Image 1: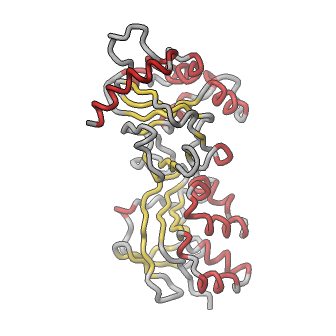
Image 2 (image 1 turned 180 degrees about the vertical axis):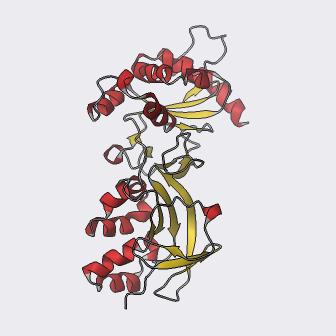
Image 3 (image 1 turned 90 degrees about the horizontal axis):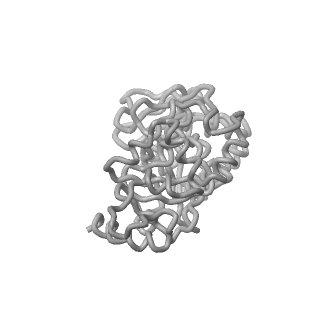
Length: 314
């Protein structure tokens, strides 16, 4: 029924978006590559697809969601790089950037939900796990925290450009490969721990590659109940940093299906252990649990937890 709905909707899209439609109403629906090629405002994207040999991918059968940056979006992107044109961007880098705009299943605007999706791109942190994308539908369609966080916004959120092999959503920026910092900022449910990291000057660590990849166990907002916040506020500056670094493992991109059974040493220096989804830390007997797994970033991975981990601060 989903595919039938999309096939029927192609004709409505062809009427409202003439630059992306067939002149012959009886012709077959166009592929993503054909639609992009017919839209002058996506010419830089087409040029990039040609340079990376991805045109055939989006001309073939499939079921993709493509967040397509406009020419203006690419111009903004190039202005922040040492490259004058899209043809100057090294092919391996450009390939991953383009794949970071693609989901392997098609979603119309009404089918998208707030949460994480997997793109086709791979950062350097994992050889198997593709990068995550966070979509926030609170106001429009915001990707990875929006334009001020290396992400983008969908233009004309009520319009779905339907193709024979998926859906195109036009976006106002080129979406960068998200770091741990980007994903922490993008998810409103991690806003408290993100603020604490900012206060302790630790954000640059989780935005960089020194000591990476990182595995981060990030407490969700509800983990910071009144008692926990009072305890944290009363700590010395050094101990606040120690608590936050106790949630980070260096030089490891540990997927949820490969968490070791023994002690896991953190950047703070002490260790904790995990059994199933339960975490046994050094500083308290309160049960902590992993509630979200495998948010893949370009420089590591994030697992969300329901309580704050505490090292032994004595």
